[in-house]
Image 1 (cartoon, helix red, strand yellow):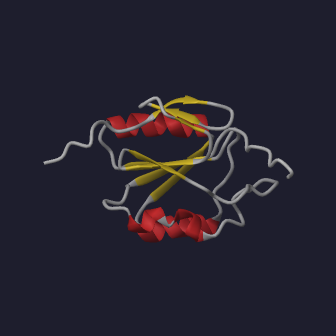
Image 2 (image 1 turned 60 degrees about the vertical axis):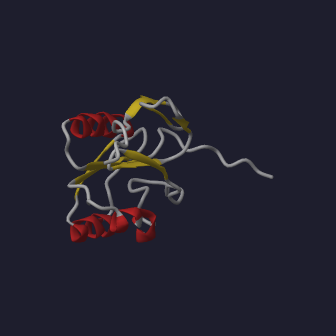
Image 3 (image 1 turned 45 degrees about the vertical axis):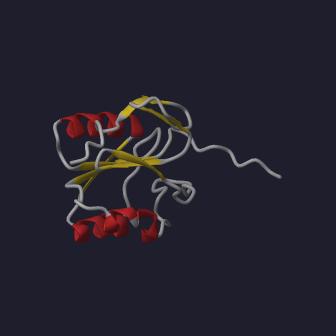
Length: 136
């Protein structure tokens, strides 16, 4: 009935964001689901080994309402690999979504390949570096 066009993927990863395959530049975290990009406003990363340890599950609310649900979510944890905390893994497990995490470059590349193959895949991507908050 309606053709929404090709899936949107990641073409370039910049220091603070992403350039999408439709040539739109996004300078903030991003979620890709069902071939569509969504701006994402997660909490700041905590210092240390597990930067998402204090994130509330509301950060991932979109995955409760999206249909069809993805089979797999690729977490891009920024420039470096960071483990996903157990409470977030459990949230996705209860939704029936497998979780894989890696740095954002690898997560974007993997998302692009799987989406091109027609898999129901999502990506939650953090930029390589967080923007510094400017004092007012």
